[in-house]
Amino acid sequence: MAALLWGAPLTAQAQCRLALVLALDVSASVDAEEYDLQRLGLAAALDAPDVRDAILRGQNGSVALAVFEWSGRFQQDLHLDWTLLQSHADIDRAVLALGNISRSFEGYPTSVGQALGYAASLLKRGPACDRRVIDMSGDGINNYGYGPAEAYRHFPLRDVQVNGLVILGDDAEVEAFYRREVIRGPGAFVELSAGFEGFRAAMTRKLFREINDMMLGYADAPRLSPHG
Image (cartoon, rainbow, N blue to C red; front, side):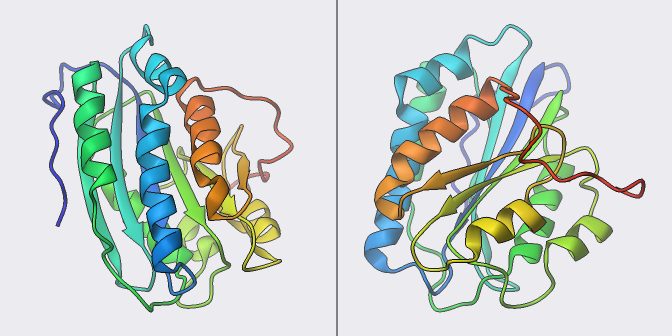
């Protein structure tokens, strides 16, 4: 069940500079210990002083956050619905909710295309923000259902930046897969985590870069075709 945290009302009048969707992999390759490292690592990353400062110091509006878990074709579960982070109290509530989530699914395959489609549906009903970003975390390649290419073909993701947080260790192909098929849009990038033990540090770096809209170069981002 989603934790509905309305840090501030998502009204048409609220100025929003970034709508950020965080998608967490809970497929069969993620065991219970790794899940806890991911869950607590995300909460700690959002709570990091540099990330808090990046969220709150923005001059062009607020950051809106939504978080879900994904694995198989129909296994997506929303844990944090759209929440405006406009104060330390708003961030405190989001950190508490994310640190206390319970795993949604176990034993299912890795369906990246379906996760992207679910993220697209969240963005469609989310706040109107200047930037829209999907942050895909995962430790494996697509092994069930349609892949990212089909998601990009059929869902409204043309103006969405998709970044990847690749968890190294289980699958030697995962980094190349994310660079080749998952990330998308100008400035899109892949952040690497040294196993799940490195998830907290990698997510902290990734959030800081995304929230600050740091475009360190276009080497990571695939070229977009004329058809998106």
